[in-house]
Image 1: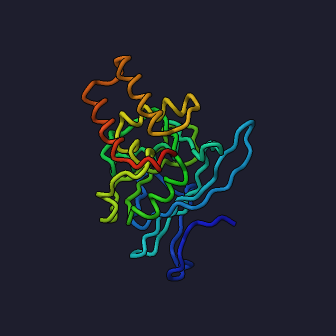
Image 2: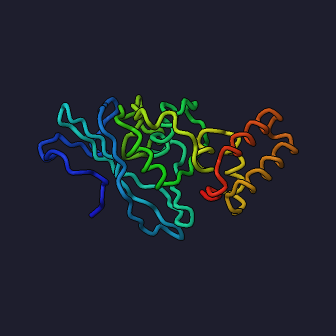
Image 3: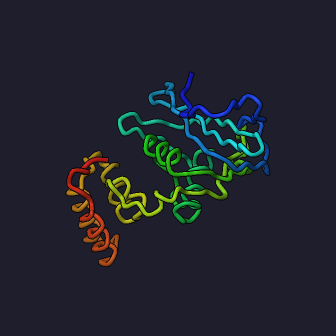
Length: 227
């Protein structure tokens, strides 16, 4: 049995529940959003993660229980969202609503699962999620698009504490972070600094962006030289 991360509240048995497979384009719900723990299953030479996204509308006694399956990389605790998939649409639209990034900001998404789960469960008070038609016509379910989200006040102005936090806010640091990850190098402040210099020397980032990223890195504590 999976731990959905739910705390004891009122009895949810009387809630009108819909599974992902039961949703149709146009369905919409607003409520508490919770990301559950995951389990892994082998698929070929890799693993896939299976986890639940649960949105509960306590006012109207309704909830969606949506099981998602994504590629999983145990060496980094990352899950992967392929463009057009259910998880891609969810994380892309959430990033759009919360961080004001453009839709389809990245071609695909590699997401640190533990950080993703912690942030959603602890920082998102409620979300409005809409069922939209899948991009892939062969898909068996709708996609999930976040239309709106309410963030806890104490989380809005919180300064980045780790390189990973900073990378989610600064696209230049994220670029260096991704390059190091792809090369299999350690994610440290020192290595990020070297990577930024290489990007600048190669003309991939401007001088202004380079110095701004360095300035943000200097605000991090040396003790956070890890993901």
